[in-house]
Length: 216
Image (tube, rainbow, N blue to C red):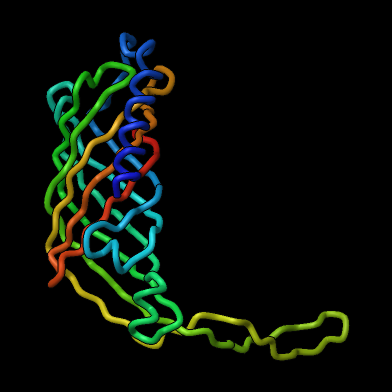
């Protein structure tokens, strides 16, 4: 966790230094805003002892208000995290994954939104859904076709068979910060952000997606 926070701090500092020559330039902001991105996800606290690092996808849409100093957006996030080997050994399964998606309503506060480089804070409540799958190796049989001989034949393909699965839906919240970097003279921006997410499961599920993408 300490290395992760140090890495985020270093990234923020480097991003700020790289953007200083551009900070005085102005960039357009439209009334409607949307974003799409992807990145890596780090589980923290109790989840960090049970899960491996994974990946995430994000899609966002909303409106800009007060010259883009404030935005109201709806967010969809998906995270795929593996279950670590220690946990799998304890429960007796050879493989497993955890999938989390959420829909949240997030206000966004932007600082210097008309500059080429701008900083923002984002966060809000949401509905979170978590699915845990435990798997084992198996063989699935499919039918293949040989056009030369004109015959059909069986093909055995290795797959991961789900032997136990359970899902839960709870309320949760997220909060974090990011950078927007304007591209060209239009509405398109590159963004980088990190957000803490907490889902109110019996033992709270906490993780930090770090996401990179494009905003319009």
